[in-house]
Image (tube, rainbow, N blue to C red; front, side, top):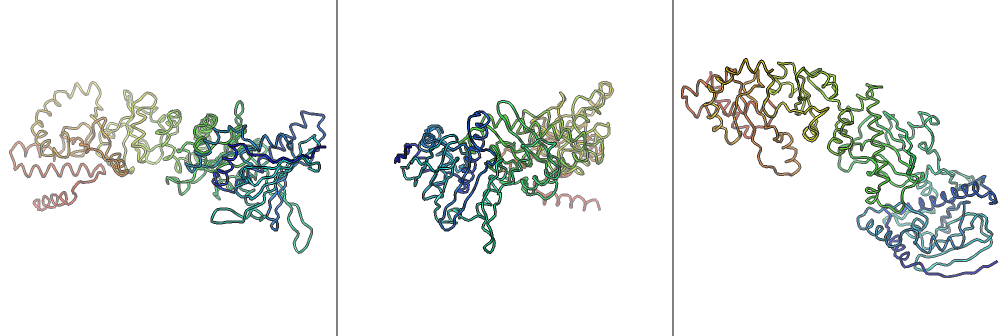
Length: 633
């Protein structure tokens, strides 16, 4: 039997990679243990498979496991498995070079990841093994491949060379002994020879590994040591739904969400075909406190073959579904990938689309099967879901179907867009809506008067995002969405138009001079003054042109620091209101133009206040109003 010992140099790219590892290309040094456990788990998987394929392979698979051994005195941590093991050639190939890891391309991505502070990588044996040098002065590996008699010992300080020795006393499998650097809390270098620290890391990263992860715990007061299994192995997502109790789902939801209430809905799904994955997702019953914070936590964790990879995986769920909690476990995700590259990974994009469709389908089904539960969901998350109408054009129709909004049809019960369309009056071709801060303000708005008088239903949209999505979407079921505060309103039937045509022409002639005067008096604030067909009881209202930006949206843009040119709107007058008819008579008499101008200002100001707008000069408005009231006493 050969017992040759060689000292070899790492491949040039490998030396560069080791330097990157030592200088913390990973976000957290703790992940070195995750990587070693992941490698051990892979080795156990491979042995089980090979034992099934090769009937001549004489191996014992009755107790496949991973063992962790801490030695505080020697300051070592050993990760041992009884899996497939490696031959001498495997060791040199997998550790001495990174040819299988993409060499130059891998290094480029690693450096980019480091420079952009992205830095959390999904490891494979070569790269994951190198992460030990973040925490080690020296690393020793002892391995023997199943079915072979010779073993291999590998050792290096990570400085450029490694020693490979053939040995004849190695057990089957692989053990990696990490000779630890001194703990340094300032550098996030924890005491990995401390069992409590190891236990915590296993719980975070490797709790759902299918194989038992064991350690020996010293006996109390000189008693016999005991064996402890550190991982729960309860990867609920890997089991079929009928094998999991509801209480298990609830416990797991609390584990991943840190929410101590029960989830509103559980979504358990499996993707098969060219890219396999499992997902266990939850819809919470309450919105988290940071739902609207820019740096709020996402809810979906990414695993690869039960190994935890990252929290808050933004690539798996769009921003408008950021409240969804749970895990996605990908089987065949390409390795050595940063958060930034993950965003562009084609397979991840496919999974994301499937997850989104499933979540939206679940919510849609909830609305039919359990309306009370849907009401809870929409009350907590509806405002966020509507952001999807701006972000996710692929699911616009589905999101429009889900919308639950207030309307003038009922004082308390919301409606769907489909329900609105079913109730549309004969001859009605548009879906009418109003936007504003609250329902009370909208219901008392002058813009609503003609619609209420003629029995037309109007959607009452009060979320800030409503100002944007109605403009972006534009229509539902082929019917345009029409703001009641924009453009001309004509609710008359064809016959009514014929019957009132002569009277309307006469009215326009009678008011022509007043409208010209008011247009000049208010030229700094309005673009036009015209007669209105949307008012029944109020003297005036302010409307925008069909394509004008709304005042609320204008304020939102300004609050975000975006300067916009002033948007002038249109003042509409109710020709049957006593104030307006009196103003016309006064103008025809040739009354003092200064007094008429002040009246015009007051008329414009009251119209602005009636719609919930802000006066440009409240003090002047109050002074004019007080003076006018004083003259009436």
